Length: 159
Image (tube, rainbow, N blue to C red; front, side, top):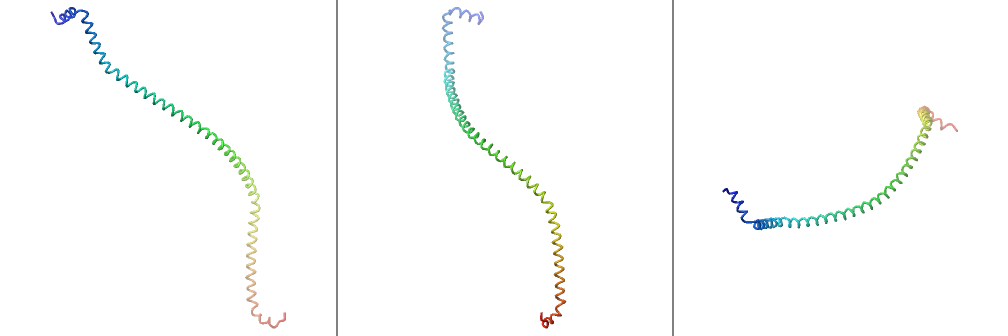
């Protein structure tokens, strides 16, 4: 007989009870091996789940505090933006008044143009008077030099 046939005969001669007992032993050995893997894995899963819960809880608390802080800051920012808006409105009104004043100044400067032209003609007239006065001064000095030789007669005249 071949080896395969001998093995089948041996299994049949052992009976079904021995097969069940062997199956039970193999199953228990396999279960022990799985217990060495499953239980530590289960413990690690529980530790990691607890740590994950802790992280999520802290994240939720931090986000809550952040939301409160942002809400408080947004409230003060809204108040400050209202003040900025009012100041911008005042500044707009001031610029509008300045524009009106500048237009008025521009018109007044335009009115000063004829006065400036008159001032130019007056300037020319004063220069010509200055030249004439200078000529008179020069002529008077010339007369002074011409009259000096006759100054000795002043002592004789009664007036």
